[in-house]
Amino acid sequence: MDTPTNPIAPTSRWMAAARARESERVDRLFDDPLAAALSGPEGFAWLEHMESAARSDSPGLYPVIRTRFFDDFLLDACRRLGVRQVVLAAAGLDTRAFRLNWPPQVCLYEMDLPEVLDAKEEVIEAAGARASCERRTVRVDLSQETWPEALLDAGYQPERPSVWLIEGLLFYLPRAAVHGLLEKVGALTVTGSLLGLDVMNRGLFFSPVAWPMQAALARRGAPGRFGMNDPETLMARHGWEADVTQPGEEGANFGRWPRPMLPREVPGLPRSFLVRARRS
Image (cartoon, rainbow, N blue to C red; front, top):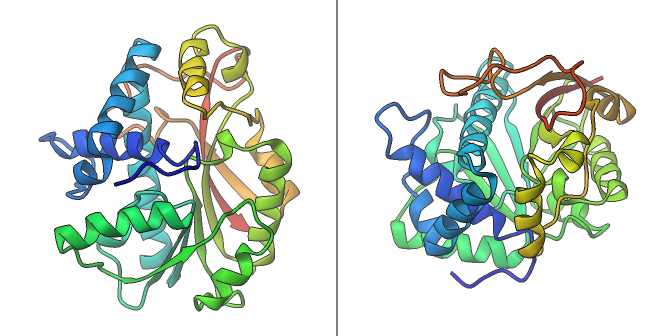
């Protein structure tokens, strides 16, 4: 795969490397047969470099916990609530269309840059992988105003319930871009639709513990930009009722998070939040 020109896009290979490593475990939380090929040597080098910078396995463990958490979220929306439209914004090298057992009639939309989806398609075709749902790719730049039109042209029906996932993206965006993206998602969703996303807190930018990893990302052209201590307020501003969980807490532990989570009231700590929200 050629290296994408967008500096954020290669982070998806780091995530794929984490999924590939997880898939080799006997006690794995999911199985992603495509992850190693999608990651390539660059992805595993990213993962090793980030874990070395952080001096821990968190850069590999966090995406594993996040992946399983949102796997369960998306499948629950489709199986229990009957949602049939799934939208992955900035899908990157995500393989949920292939590795999850979707109920009938689910249509999954993958939105990302053309070079990301084109490179991904090469690996999928080489592996002979078949999607377990209807899969539609939408080649867009989410920083452009016209991306909703491309999604609608692909067949997305905004008058019907949907479940969206914005995974591993907001951290890298300027504040205005975060609000702009959420505003557009809100305009495309009806009451009762669902949205999952992850967001870091502001403490991540000020904690010396997180500085080495922040510096490593900046050197690779993908510095962190956005943090929010109160994701509930962010979501309410855009018309969503949010349930917020930290990795390691009940429902986002899976027997793998190595340390207890201190309450959110304890200040000054770097934190990550996994958000499940319902359109109000």
